[in-house]
Image (cartoon, rainbow, N blue to C red; front, top):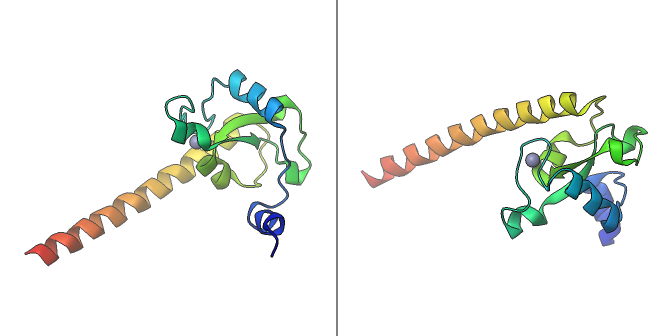
Length: 122
Ligand SMILES: [Zn+2]
């Protein structure tokens, strides 16, 4: 399968935002993810995962104008997916709720792994 098709398969109908436009959005948002607050200027690794998200999903007819675009880290953008929101506040509430859910799953898994490790050690 060609790379473009694979990308489309995983990402859906994602519009390509020209770098120059993306940089304007990043600058306006101070390079911070508008969902979790991750600072894109804190490290190269953070900077590398900054994306542009469309609050009112492009796949559902959302506009490509700057007022519909926000800086989002890749994980937050993936969590939000093509879900449609009328405001940044609504989208943020959803993404932060999902992050909290996943954080709990992570904590539970970590605890289970540590429990299994210490049981092996003794
Ligand atoms: Zn984020």
